[in-house]
Length: 410
Image (cartoon, rainbow, N blue to C red):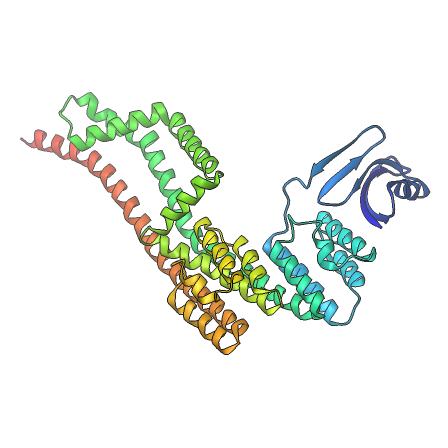
């Protein structure tokens, strides 16, 4: 069976929307007619929606929507709880779908349930939605089904997704105040140059006195901003677009990520962030029973920095050829010594899974510490820059006034 979305007119001529499970669109149309509905459109729910009406048939994607980290965490936690209570997978999926407030999420879950009812495994059913369920997520579930510990694996995945969501929220909250400061600074400076400064400076220009250099520079900046502000913001937007477009090319992005790792403060933060993501993903995969080489390949996909990702893929190749994980990661030079020593200890004692988990926790703690330092430096830096700009504006206005008073008293 498959899941279909439909739009139809009821007996009163009002439009109705809903979902229905059926073997074919013909059954859905018959179902609607039995309800005295007039079908307008029927949609087969899958990764690419198939929209069918009376005259034509075409495909469109899911309009860019994607399960967020919090939505994925909630879905996983609900499913894990129900399966742990010995509820069959198809019933658990139906129950979770019924809890969803958003129709498109409900339709995805019902579509997965339909494939499970057709005899596919849960992991195979999730493969139809790679945009919503990451490769790491699907591989972990596949390992859980293979080993017969799906409930435990789902709980681990739920914990992992919730920790990721918490980390994401911490980063967003930490950056919120500096971003507000920067936007406020840009707004205040734009207001001063565009409206306040011209009216005040006009008095000095009409007086005919010689103006200080700083005042002349402020006048030039104000006039230039008033005349070219649309071009300034347009060029800024074009520059951002051009840079983001260039970074879509793998060679340019690799070069940029390599240079980024060499920067004094940002480079260390980037290393810590990416190695924390890698360690956390590798930990949950190995604990779930995914082979190490395959786990390394999947973990590389969650690494945002292409240079570190390249190093992880190279480490996977070396492990496949018989090298230890410790030596393979050490050769890259991007992983911290403590992490490497813990991995080496785990390999020598046969407790790599637990050591990787402790490594992930350690990297997460270090990431939060570095993030606190960066935010702590960014906030006063923005305030100092903003204060310096306001000070220059005030000096540019006060100096001509002081000169005027000196001339009058003289």
